[in-house]
Length: 439
Image (cartoon, rainbow, N blue to C red; front, side, top):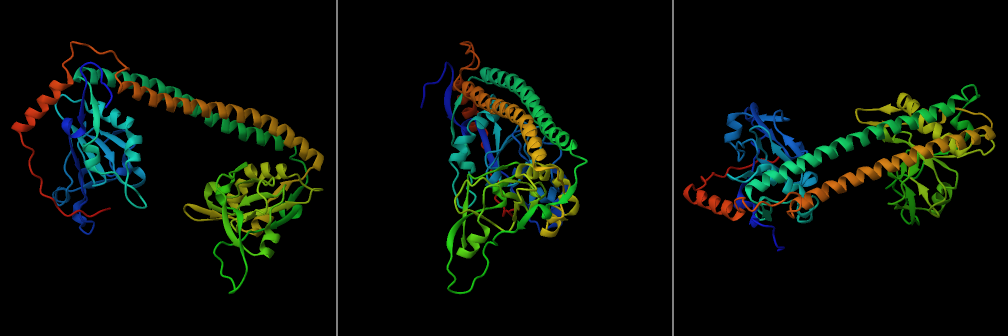
């Protein structure tokens, strides 16, 4: 272990706090739910204050039927299971939790918010310590046995105050950057609308009149026994983004030679998604021959334009902006999903000035969009710097470098001895274990 600053000491979390996990009453008993006792689940933790309203409430009978117990304001919460592992919360009012949450109740003299920021700093370690199958987890024992640096109580409070001062400044800067992102998105939209407005009087053609449109290969389709296939790279919906292609993760699909010849992508092909989530509907971009022999799946349409009638970037920019509204209107929609069929896609109306006019429009539009791109890159870089600075602040805090030490502070060793003595005189009550029903 590294050497600690003046007055600090090493201790396990369980030496300065009580740890526990919650529980879930039986879901078959309606009388256990719908009361007035706030009951938090791990998905409600957002790395900040939590309390007040919760998604679900327990009755007194529900509380008493499970391992859930009331926790005081100031309790630090850590999510232990699945995708939410490592998320934190700091209770602002009394509540209880399910078994997916570890509760950390600081002992007298230990500052709860210090523990909160300390665990925020240690999140990467917690995530690296997960174990299990498809959804690795952490457990209460791991949290309780973490060795952590403990400053004197007075210094804990100074550290928390300085962290929150610096984080408040960072939060304000991040809010400005996020507003800039929204404004830049509006600028992108305005630039596109202005560019096409200049050709509002151009003749209108349907997309199907401008070139050949085909669907791709269905994944997992049944074939006759003995059919010869070979693994072939193919584009999925995830690869076809709005205004770009994401080729970092290209998968293979079994395809026959005939299918490969028929569906092989060529430079200049316009790709448009059939659907899925609403944001995926009709989004697309242009294939530039990046991967030899690549084909596309059935959820990605390919448009091979007649070069005498249409420019790929002209069609792509139009479809990504104006076409999106058409797809939403004409597509098949459910609560969260949307799709467009071949007939509707062919009927997408597109202004059709001369090819020379289309090329001039694309050149001017991309000049403007490149400036937006540069500004967006700058904003994203500053957001990354803000995240790095947040990590750096926490690192300095728990190395004893964020605030000065005061030799007059009561040493952490005295705090630890006082907690041990208090526990020796007040044994923790034994809590009977009850059967838990997982949510």
